[in-house]
Every structure is written in C-alpha cells, then in structure tokens.
Length: 94
Length: 299
Image (tube, chains in turn purple, orange):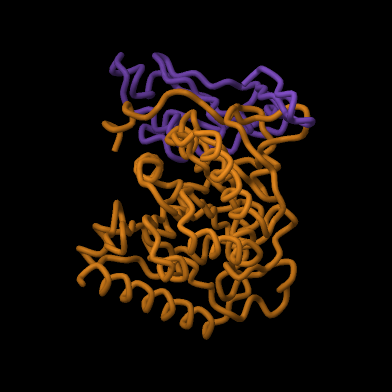
C-alpha cells in the first residue's frame, strides 16, 4: 500500500489524523469511572460495548479501557450506551 | 451479543482523525463494514459523505484502496473494476461500491440497474441517511414523508420514500440485505456473508445523521435502534429470492410488539412540522410495508 504506483498520478496515502487532531472539535470529554467499568471490575475482558459503538474507533479494549483523547470527537455515544453507566461526559471548558 | 464481540476482526481499516461529523452513523457502519471486508477489497465511491470521510489528497483515512468516481457512474465504475481484475487474473479481489441514498435512489439507479442486469460480480452498498446530507440536507427520493429538508422547508416532504429494496429485488440478484449501525455484529456478519457470495449483492444500511435529522450526536445508536423497533427500517436478508427476517426484526415479527411510529418521530427535529394527517399516513405506510414483509416471510 505504501508503494507509489507509477500508473496513478494522484494517489493518497493512509494516515491517522487526516483532519488533524479531531479531539479539538470536542466540547464534552468522556471520563471513565474504573470502579464501575465492567472489564476493570471483573479484571477480565468483558463488555467492551463502548469500543463496539465508537464511530471513531478511538477506544482501546484492554484492562483498563482507554480512550485516545487526541482524536475522540466527544459525541457521547459511549456514555449513552455504557450498560454500567461508567462513562460520564465532562465539559471541556470547566 | 457481547459474546460474539470477540470474534470481530480487531484490525481498524478506518483510521481515527477523519472528517466525519460527531456521532456519525455512517462512520460507525463503515468501520464494521471494512472490518468484515478486510484486505483484498477495492472500493469505489461517488461524491458523498464517504468521500469527505476518506479525506483530501495527499492523505486518506482509510487503508483500503479506493477509486473516486462521479455520482451517476458508481456501479459502472465497479463493473469496470471487475472487468479489469478479471482481465489481469485477480479474481479473488472483491469490488465494493459504496454510495449514499442520492447516489443510489436518484442518480446512481441506472448504472446500478445495468450492473445488476448484467450480473456483475460486486457488492453495492447504499448507506441510506434519507437525504443529501453532504451538501446540506436536501430532499432525496429516500426522504420520508413529513421531514423538513432545506429544499422542503415549509410544507415538508409530501411524498413517501421510494422502495429501493423492492426495485433491487425485481432484478433477481444473488443477495439483498439490510443492516443498521445499532446492531454492529449483525452488520459485520452480513458483510462477511456478502463477501463469500458470488454475483450482484445489494446492501442497504440505515444511517442516522445527527445534523441532518436534528438530534444530539450521542443519540445516534438510539435513533438507529428505534428505526428498527418501530419498523421504519426492517432487518432482513434475501438469498436468491428467499426472504428471512434477521436480528431484532425477527423477534419483532414473532412477538408482534412493534413500537408506534411517534417514538421515533418525536426525537428528531426534522419531523417537527409533521401534521397529524401526515403522521397517520406515515404510520399506515410503515404498517403496510411491514405486513408485506410478514407475507414474504411466510411464503
């Protein structure tokens, strides 16, 4: 994929952050309460519905679950879909 | 559902930091579609929201090769790609055309119909966000009755949505499936299945659009789920003409506990001008379609 094809004059190459640090778009930041988050509580891979429903793919499945705030646009779907209500949206301004 | 979550391909083909809106339903669907399609795939896209997501030259946010084409020629360009791949002996590569509802229902229909008639071996995916969302919410033939768009701002849209699925069914193609980002595992499974089948395959995804439909970005999955729960959008698949309900729609068909349409309508600003008469017409339209599907499932 990285090799440039001589037959194609205008070919884009894949890169993370094509639109820059999209975390700048955010007005609310997701904060995980690891005391409620199911993988952290059970200490084994489980749930991960936040990863499943993240439109950006910025959530890392692991123990504990991590969110890449450089690229998280702050839509709040993870907070809405979390079955344990472990994610809250906190204002970036305050 | 979460048990199957671990079977999903962990590789991300849609990279973070792309140009899709906050809480974009397309971005969520596309992530799983690409996970299911994997490598050995060529995409072809017309000018649509997806082109915006793919980004500006010289960088792109998607790691799968993609060809950009004009609006009306999506399926024609896919047919060209298939012919080229066959000529060079690369028959194991899947060609996937991704177009919005404007590029499918309105402008892309003749090329799609032609490709389906010729039985071109490719997957055509229509992500249906019920309007021309990329250019600022204009009315398309997929917009439902009663919705405000920038071209129907006062009287709202007065016509019903075109039934593209029935049009594709009439082409007798190998596989037709509908799917929704509210059920990503269902979406993933259907794309995996579609990749294995030969012949023309048509998939339609119900993609909620926060700015176009007028709801907060955090509700994308809820709205997509309500579309299924109320029967506005039905999850099914059709293999060689054999119809079957799948996922949530299957249990709705068995139990008959569909929610009234108002649950779905009241959460969206685009329906704020819908009249009582239009609402009852829309409910009737939805019920009729649902009953048609029930009949198909029986026989």
